[in-house]
Length: 603
Image 1 (tube, rainbow, N blue to C red):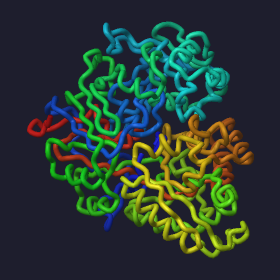
Image 2 (tube, rainbow, N blue to C red):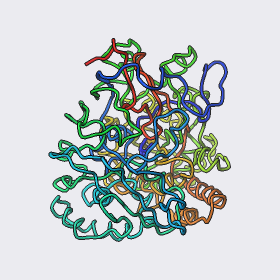
Image 3 (cartoon, helix red, strand yellow):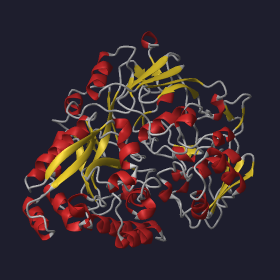
Image 4 (cartoon, rainbow, N blue to C red):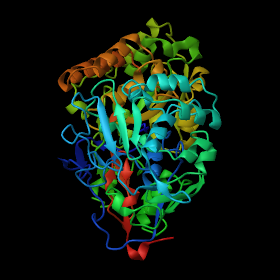
């Protein structure tokens, strides 16, 4: 999933939201936090190397550009934000200060009485690991936010806040006209003000909003609201050159990065523990191996060897999760989520089959023909996945009314195909990640389902590292018809009042098209756009709940996507690893807070 589940990740794992599995063949009990895991709390020992095993890479080695869960996991080690989610059981969905001195309120002067101005102070003592070291300043925060809408590789989540921050849209419109070179972009940022984000002084950044937004501090937990040192102006954002010249203000620094192969981190001597109440930095080094497979990684973790501690960007194979849960394996951790993962994408602008996917009746037909229950079964079964039949998961806004727009009905599917002019079906191309067992099995299941209505599905396999960056995030690839259907996953960019983070990046018409958004199927509906705008401008949360439900129906009526499940995330770790507390933004444990038994501190 892109974060978020943006945000976010491989098709993962897979337990019902709001439930912790104690035995897949037995009882299921309510839960409010992660289940399973090794001992938590302060370490018995510190030091050693944490070995993380994965199957793929980050999207970008750039804190202001990454919009992939693994990218957020990467930046957790070396890039800090004003606010974040703490890796503390029972509090991991809350927002706490990171670089900020405190949570802003109207009482402490951090939020103006009209809710339109946020004044946030940065803790003293936070340093960049430059030579010589120097303080992270409010100007660095402004630079980081400016970089998000650069013309070379903009951040994909800007629809979340582009209309919320004063002046952001005109600033970005001007930026889009600048040459995509480092000097030209630096010159634009240096001479052009962003009125909604101002460095009042070295330690104070002021945000001005176009309307009150109770979720604003939650939004600022996203990795992309990181500061950027002035040295980043020498490089194109998101570039391979910048990836080799990262600068850290977190507990670790990047020692080496070999794309699709490995990332090595070690302690950052410029970091001070007194400035960071979130990350403990118990281990000396973190080593990431990105060359594994889902099955081989699971096997290594279960052997408890010092060279295999935790997962990087993968999860336990879905077909193994039920057995692990049934036997009560203490190293399996199932955690609450807020996601649509996976869901089926329809390429609305594919030229294939006389632009069949642009016809709403064709998309509706395919939706009626897909058996959600079959997919859930190959992802671990119904006890491990809550069926999702609409856009918003039930935990968003405290729950919106549930409905199923497309219950399985192949007869209805054939009727709609005939009405659309395709009585004999056609052939579609299905893009999927062949390193993911869940993705592969989902593709195969849909292939079988659609064959029953005369639609032939051919696979377009993709490596993990290419799936978003070379396919989904490039509109021209969709417009050329390289793929017709695909899979994606999405999670909240923040938590609670987070409907905006589903609709604006995914369904809000052309402003949400990649690379600025994550509307990979290039869906655009004036009706849906109006419904989304109305919900954004709701005066209170109760009205917002009703209006977001209306937006949900508008998008589903067009069959923009086919949602499948809202799962728990299942993670696994070796027995020697402790303090394995789930971080929802990372969809795994926070590596900066894990510690390792002395006898297993592998190099």
